[in-house]
Length: 428
Image (cartoon, rainbow, N blue to C red; front, side, top):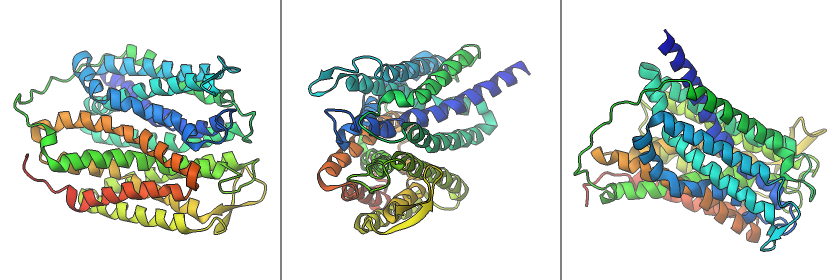
């Protein structure tokens, strides 16, 4: 009975950490709205997206080592290290509002570099948590492991929904006086959850499963052409998934060069609308979990990538004047929300199923090489930092909506992968 109770507490802790993965990751884009207002940055979307870039850059460095840590130190120690690193990363982000606040470095606010360091450290934590949480839920859940993983995924999407809303509400009116200390309550909340999870996990005994012996002669996954196409697709997918709501948040929050919303409510509305994108990802995942037994991964990926391309193309060509009046609690009276924003939010239904379907197609037929392939996949999550950065560099030059052509190109490759590139051929 005691072991069962310990397992329940551990499962709940893992589910909360599943949510923290999304919480920490989705802090970067809305906080970027604050940094965009600082002297020296002055509206640069590319620099505003640098926190997100640093967060995902950690995956490129830590993706494969995280898997090796799991083998060497076990599930519990790896989880504890990940939680401690996460606390440190968020704490350094908090410090960016305290230290070097009146100094400059290379023409930029010096505390901006402190924040980027914190985002980078937090990225290490999120990468390690991604590596350990799924297998820990599988280990702890037994026959109910899939149910626990689905619950964890749902909580992950819920936190992705709430984070931009919370940050947007705390920022309030975006001005040159907006500072990162405006969102300190969110940072305190994150540190509190990490600290509590660390303490709870310290007192829960968790036994690692017996190591699974793999063949020493496993073929390198890079010998499979469909796997190579798959890791390119996953790199582009994570960039698309993050770039759509991140740039949308910037677009709606920018009253001058963006959607032209009332400056007093623009940041709040940007956070709410971006949050709905993540909510639709939750809906899409639930739907996919129901139909996946009947509809193949290839069919699902083909349909959603094609629909996402169509939605974004329409959003690009629609003028800002094409808007619908919508009511928000943050605003008095109706707000004319661009139809383009609504179409981009609907893309959340499409991107929700892409990770699982791409992974499923890319590792098909790899056999003993699957474990190695999983570590490479985790490293390719860096696309979530690189592609949005490229997109927002274009946004600085050609505007927010035209910058979505970058994501259209990425989705076109994903569609190619679904239709032709995922076909399994023998190792070359």
